[in-house]
Length: 386
Length: 189
Image 1 (cartoon, chains in turn green, purple):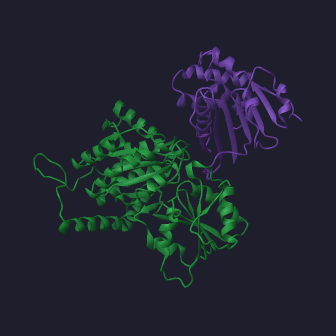
Image 2 (cartoon, chains in turn purple, red):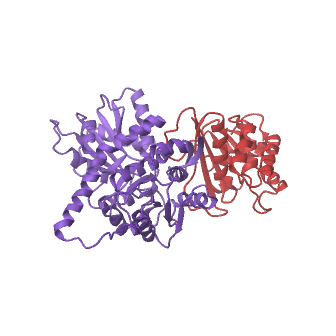
Image 3 (cartoon, rainbow over the protein chains, first blue to last red):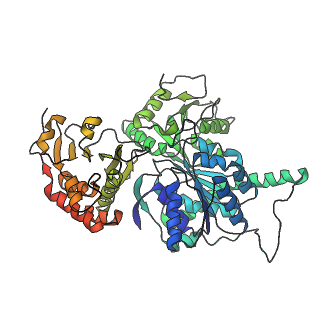
C-alpha cells in the first residue's frame, strides 16, 4: 500500500508492523507525532501493545529496559534534551544487552533553545553501546525501523534509528507500507535469550567485580562488530522481499570520481541532486552516504574511498573544540590505510540548528575542495555570519 | 519539477492545504513532497508551507525559495511580508480575496487569480466568522487555476485528509473551483 505520510508516521507504521509489545513514551518536539500516532493505534486496538505514559525520558528508557528484560519487544522515541536526559539509561540498556529500538529525531540541543535539526544529540551518545542508523527519506525510515528490530534481537543490543527533524519528521512523501504478512515473515516474534521469568527465577545486574566486568565489555564490543557482517545479510533478506536495499554505506557515482562528498541524513538527497547536475557537466564528482555510525564501517569506507584524491566531509553537528564528528571518525578510519598518498581531506560544518542546506551550500563546498585550498584546521564552517 | 509555496496565518490550514494537494497529485501518479516551514506556529502568525511535484522522487531537502506558484490565504499578508520573494517570472498567484484579480495587477508580471474562500468557508460552516478555515476552498480553486491536478482528485484527497466535515469541505472546494476568477492576461508592471 502506498501512502503519503510524514517521516514521523513512517516510524509509527514500522513499529506497528514490527508487532511491538511495549511502548513507554514521553513527548518532545519534533518527535511527538511518532508516539501520538502509536498511542492512537494502541487505543483503537489496531496495535495490541502496552502504551505507557511516563513522567520523563529517563523513565521511558527505564521502562523499555524493564519490558525488554521481561522478554517483550520494546520501542520508544525521543529528541535532543529528551535523549540527553536518557543518557544514563542508554548505557544501561546496551550493557544489559536489551534489543530495544528507539527513534531519535535529530534536534539541536539548547541553549539557544532550538527545535530544528542537528545531529549532535544522537552523535553525543556515541559511546553508550547503541547501534546508530541514519536515514535519508521516509521509505528508508519505515524500512529501517523494521530492520532495526531484527538486528537488535540478533545481537542483543539496542538500535537507534535517526532521522532529521522536519526535513523528514514533518515532510510528507509517498511511502510503500509493506503487508503485515511480509513483515511477519521477516521479523518473527522475539525469542529473548534471557528474560525475567517467575517460573525460572534469575537475578540480573548484580555487582560485577573487576575480574568479570572487562569480559562483559568485550562481548558488547564484539557484538557491535558482528553487526558489520550481519547487517548486510539482514538487508539482503529485506531486499528479496521488498526490492529495497540501503547498505551500511552507499557509494553514489564514485566510479572514476576525483572529488567525493561524505554525507548523512537528508543532506545526502540534496547532494545527490548537486552531483547529478555536475556529472551532467562532465565533472568527476560523487558521494558516499554513511548510514551506519555505530559500529563504524571502517573497512567499507576504506574500500569505497581507495584512491580518491579529494574528500569533503559534510557534518551537521559539532564537537566543540575539535570539529565535525563524522570527519573525525572517518579521518581515524582512513589513517594508515594502504593508499600511497593521503587524500586531501576537508571537513565542513553546515546547517547547525536546522539552518537550510541548499544546493548552493553543497556547490560551494565542492568548489572549495576542488580549488585545492589546503586548510590547517580540521573544520571549515560554511555560511557563518561575521 | 514544479514548486509551490503557500502563505497563510496560523489556523487557516496552510499545512493541510499542502498535504491535500500532495495526496491529490500523488493519486494521479506523480511524485510529491510537502512540508511546512518549520517554526513555532501560533494562531494568526504568518505560516508557510511548501509542495514539490515531479515525475521521479524529489531529492531536494530544503525550503522552496524559487516557487512556480503561490497561494495566499490571507490578502493582508501581501502588505506584511515579501510574498513574491523568489517567485519565477510568469509564475502564478492565487489569492483568497473578494476583489477581482485585476486589483492585484500591481504585484508584478504574474498570472493572478482570486477567489473569496473566506465567504465560501463560512457558507459551509468551516471555522468561525473571525477565523474561517479556508484551505479546502482554496485548493479547489487551485485545481482549476493551475491545471496541475483534477478537481475530483482534490476532493478525494480532502476526504482522505480532512475526515471532519468532509462533505462540507468537498462542497467548499467544488464551489471555489466554480467561482475562481482568473485575470484575462498576465498582468504587467
